[in-house]
Structures are given as C-alpha cells and as structure tokens.
Image (cartoon, rainbow, N blue to C red):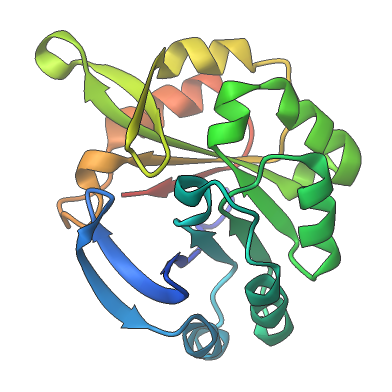
Length: 207
C-alpha cells in the first residue's frame, strides 16, 4: 500500500500568504511570506508543495511568473503551481520556470478538453485538476462545482463532470469542500469516496 503524502497548500493573496475561511479572504488570516514558508517546509522534508495564487483568476490576469520562478528556485521538493492558468502556453512557461506540476481549475471546468491539450504538451503527470465543490440544491445533498474562489456557481454537478472527463488524460486530482475550508472539523470523506470511485488518478484532499 502506498504511503500518504504530505503536501502543504500555500494560498497567495496580494503577494503574501493567507488562510481563508470557507474561501473568504475577508475572514482570512495573514500567515507570512511565500519564500519564507518554502524555506520552512524544506526543513520539514514534506513530499511536495502546492502554491495557489487566489487572485489571478478573480482578477483575470496572468500568473505571477516572477513569484513562481523565485519559489521554484528555493524549493527542494516538487512544486505545483496554480492560479490563473488558462492556456497551454502558460503551462509550458510555468514548467520552464522550475515547477514540476501545474494546477488548473476554472479553465478546465469551462473547457474539459484543455486538460487533454495540456497533458499532450507537458505530460499528463504534470497536470493537476483542482475541483472546488459545495453541496447545493434541495436539502444541500448534491455536490456542485464552483469556480473563481467559490464566487461563481457553475450549476455543474460533480458526478456529471467526472463522467464527462473520464477518458481525458491528466495526472492528479485535488478535491476541496469549500464549506470545510479552515473549519478544522475533518475532511469530507463522502466527497473523497465519490471522486475515488469515479477516477483512477492520484488524489489529494483539501478542506
């Protein structure tokens, strides 16, 4: 049996690290500088690190390539970057800066075929799909996908999307229940079970 991997997820807002509450920056907490955090996790010998710029998609701008380069230079473990990634060209650039993986969310939900194009460009092992979900609908029993830091309701059911992409190559999947973000009441095991049953790629759980 494969051992569990420890992957810190660092959220960048206004170029500093924050901890959000149910994806809310307003209720969040400043926790430091990205480079200093990477140095700390270097010493902790974590398996991998994920850095997500939560402003890029909201502001509809390019990823912060300078930050990515600086973090990658300092990192002694595999680095996954996400935030504002929409094109194959961006993925190629991010990989060229030293990141091993690129996370994509909103753009891949709008156009699932983007996952196939990215995988063809850099290899499926370097493409990470991030799905942010919350229970919606009658009695809040149905997991639905949200984008743009949980601000945009897509109306797409999680199970329908996973069925749609079942034959599209990508390397890993990250699932996050928005309602559990920083609530400290445990992972959503029900959510993880659904995703595990419908996918066969490595899975990381957040929230």
